[in-house]
Image 1: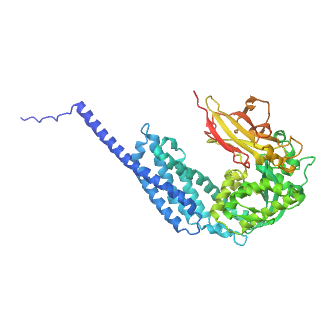
Image 2 (image 1 turned 90 degrees about the vertical axis):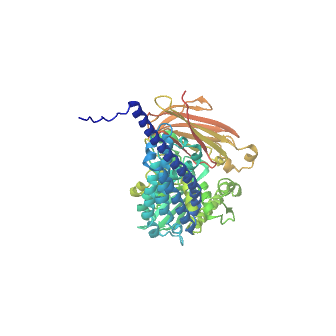
Image 3 (image 1 turned 135 degrees about the vertical axis):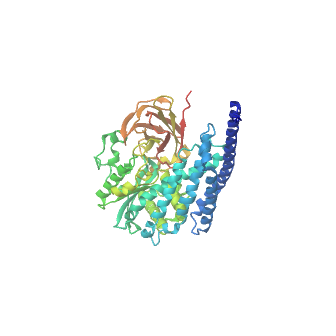
Length: 588
């Protein structure tokens, strides 16, 4: 009887070596696939950067041929980059230590760029920019309303792109990719909120533009030469009538047209506001912009206007001469009735400084500012400008907190919820964002803010259970004796301070839910007035700067463990640019 031989079993060591060999082969294949994909992805992403930069200019061209070609070119690079990186093999490799975060950042960047290239940008590229220009002083409301579809589609694509890049840390990517990825993710972070706000605004835009009845808006022109919390004194006020897209100046006024130096505030004031800002906010029309609460500024502007002129007001806008200079870059120079010419380069200097030497009388100054307002308005209403550069200039003003708009209608205002247009401080810090603020009010009753320079920095210390935030303002009076000797009295002010000395009132705002810790002046702790405003703790400090002197003012707040990691600082938009930095303290 024959016997069948039993199968020969492999030695465990041999099995282990075979398994190790198979695993090695898989890892080698995985590394090769990811390596090849990574090479393709980084090549395509780097190629996309100059196209994105080029498209920023092409969006402003009436001829869309070049833009369409760039969109197609970008779509090719974006789709190839995503195809190379957005694979299951790549996702597996992302779980590896050390290199995982880098791979994740690269893959998500390809997703974001592809969403922009295939969704947001084509929708915007199909929009004819000429419809954004007024014709015969009127905007075509019906045509602009048709933008709702493309804007909504672009906003959805931008939202998907923003979701892809929200967790990306560019610092974790290879050095060769940091620059390109920083530019591409920066474009996403800039575009997404703007498109989201535009999409939310589209349903109420016809009403805002007077399609269903005329609207009256007050335009405050804040003069930064005399600083106030949201910019400067609103010495010039314009009533704009908007009906069926047609915008016209209905009336102009100056601060002298209102009842100032009143015995009591024109509207009731919160005692906390009085403690932090005094009651002058409601007693002088020039001081209604002292706080960062632009809703309150709008209420007081409406009340002063109603008392003097009786016209009902549907909303209040605000702009400053610095923003006007940005807009002049799009409209071109304007010539005033006086013969003076304003350009993008010299408008700020003329409007906030030279005008007082040229026209010492207040009445002549008023005529000059009135002429400037009319001529800028005429330049805009003529439609003789490139719409994209004009919109870019306006967005720049909004980003710098130089432009505000507060509609009194609840539905209109809801469409702007979360927008910087409603005010510089968010109503509530969220889980991701922690916001602080510092706001400047000149006490000199002069126009010397033109000669001040300021830096505002925040130091964040997370080395203990609760984070602390120290906001430090360095404030400088650059005025010298020779310049002072050439100034008219209207510029260097009254008798509040020695000639050439600048008195300043500053309000420091902490994050929501934080508490005041301490304040210092030039490095020495000082007692200060504290209170609460807009749901935030506030500390009030004063500075007196003689000729060519600098002072440092600091306030520390203690936050909570749940504060958002992203820290930002908002501040009064001054005549001269404000430098600002957020620094994280290194823990030992």
